[in-house]
Amino acid sequence: MPHPPITLIAGPTASGKSRLALERARATGAAIVNADSQQLYADLRVLTARPSRDEERQAPHHLYGTVDAAEAWSVGRWTRAVLPLIDELASHGRPILIVGGTGLYFTALTKGLADIPAVPTEARDEAVALYDTEGEDAFRLRLITFDPPAEAGIASGDRQRLTRAFAVARSTGRSLSDWHAGTTPLLKHGRYDRLVLEPERETLYAGCDARVLAMMQDGAVEEVRALIARDLDPALPAMKAVGVREIAAWLAGETTRADAVAALQQATRNYAKRQLTWFRNQCRDWARA
Image (cartoon, rainbow, N blue to C red):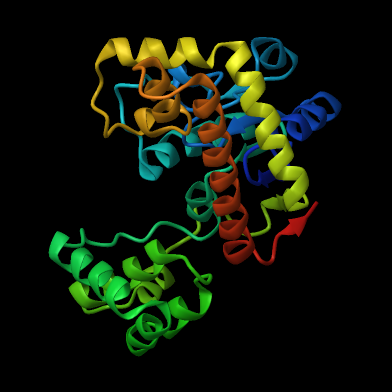
């Protein structure tokens, strides 16, 4: 029996992924599966622009708001949850839309996860110090001696990925590209279609700004106030969601509401820009819309 169609829909925040998925789900009867690391958390419906309760009633939604903010989910934990879900939905013949903005989730599905040993703090610090001291061009010349494919595939200005590739090669004696080359995709090729939403940057940024204003009216402040009241570890993923720090600063009297809104709009635009860059570099062979 052939597998039902699976479509991966990726893109930056405020690009219209959820709206497109809902339109397709209503037309085809598909189930929508979350591939956004922040929309997993029950405490962040407004801040992460999770589908509304009305939208969730219009089509089956899975892995949205199912994790408590006190938990820390990794990409590995998400894959362990999503793979049996995909199999279950497929067994009922239902089309599947996997939708989100977390690039590593899609990488795990289409390329696999590399079992890379933990990189010592000393190696990470060395890489960052070299980058900051020498600058990107000189650092790339260092990296290319260890890992030419990684150097070629990392976008200009992506300090985090450049230093990560360098630290992995230095600490493990094996390039990051070699580690990734040994992985197996979690979804078989030919089982899915791939689509990246890539709006014009000006349109995307305007959408980010408008979304922040709507969030401030629709309960984002109350969400952050509730998180603060729980006194959770600030290192938890939910506490690092875009908007938590900015709104918390206003609630603490450290800034004005207007400045908090402006800071949140800027942080949201920056986040969308990073996502755009990631998908352009990592999903070059995906269809665009």
